[in-house]
Amino acid sequence: MNTNIGALDRVLRVIAGLVLLSLLFLLDGEAKWFGLIGIVPLATAAMSWCPLYTLLGIRTCRTNGR
Image (cartoon, rainbow, N blue to C red; front, side):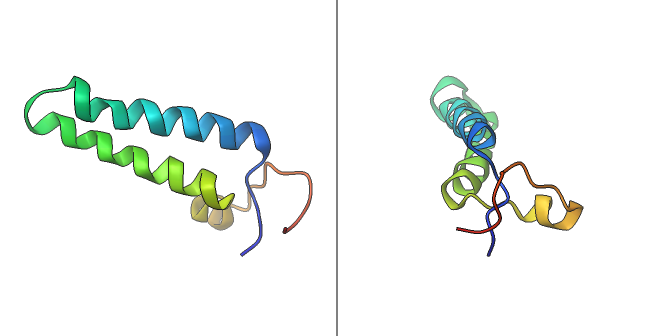
């Protein structure tokens, strides 16, 4: 699995993931569970690899692989 997410992209994914996860605490009722979607950007940032980027041929990092 090659790295296809750059540093800025990783930071933005972490921020987006944390914002989405905060919905678990900010919203009431069933809508709060949409906050679990925040796990996806956090996981892709942690792995530095995005499966959607692979399918679309996108790379935001400078070097190939780790």
